[in-house]
Image (cartoon, rainbow, N blue to C red; front, side, top):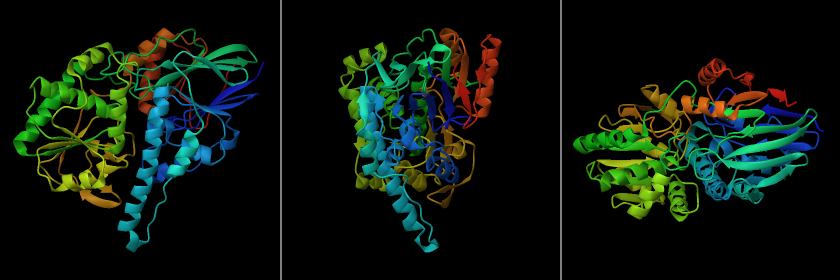
Length: 467
């Protein structure tokens, strides 16, 4: 029997940058290796340094391909990790696109920042290059849902559907410890009991320790049934005023959800016709994966039925998928009304920054936030009502209408989280991660009322024995 402990090196008291390290006498494995997304100075400090030697990591288990869960893999493998990287086939395919795009965005944003600040001699460097991303991806080993494998001696693992995004998984670990066999379940990001595209999460079985996200602790989502009408109302206003509607959107899942809702609205003539541009090469590539795998990934039954009836739920007549920089820049000279869907969802990089820079000072325009906005991000500052914001280090007046739709979240809400923990019946402890302090406190209080014991809210770097 071996000693075992878990320590938390990201998404502990904050939402992004998931990195959780399981160590036994036989070796160590990392649960996710995510990028912290927030204020530039905080992000630089947290993303350029690991709290553990990368070379000491014997294996990495990836829950899904969102950048706040996979975005530092290139740095980890560049800096010495040489172990296998386990993921579902869907996550592996998507991570290849996400990490290459992340490297290109960082390099492009650094070039642009350095260019416009040349006179001030201010410069930034990308975290990693496309070559670093390729090196990390070369370690991928794909594992299907429910397959058992051994990432370390004395540890058996399996990946279970988490219902969050395409290919997303919970990581179930059966660990030999000094006190006997212990089962740890790491949810990654947990999907909703009611979803637009994905199946609901798998049911947990005989869990000892549960590591669970808490993003929406204390908050419940709007009903998905209301999403179409809310989006239709924004479109009607845009048509009436000639507005450009900029929608900062996560390229994975959120963009496809919005396009699916728009497809349904236009098919049913529930909203007036308006040009729609998806301006994100990564989102274009990911949407192609969604279409390619409609029949063999874990999609929701209702979406599958609609897709069969419609034939092309992501490609209606009024949408244009843009890949090139010239196509993107051409939108600056087009007049509204139009919808521009562009990454990133928290307004922390990519083409959406250029669209915000060009449109945020127009009082007729609308910025529609459709995802969680972490503390310190530009999206959060806009959501909080700041009237002067910096984009690429330059100040811009905010005159556009800033609006939020919470209905699209692919995260479990408060009630979903409580129900999941009750079903899991964790015998030895619960660790709340991936949540702001207020969210974690609200979820912890609710679990205490339900009689759930040993609920911990780990601090950054804190470690716990698994006995």
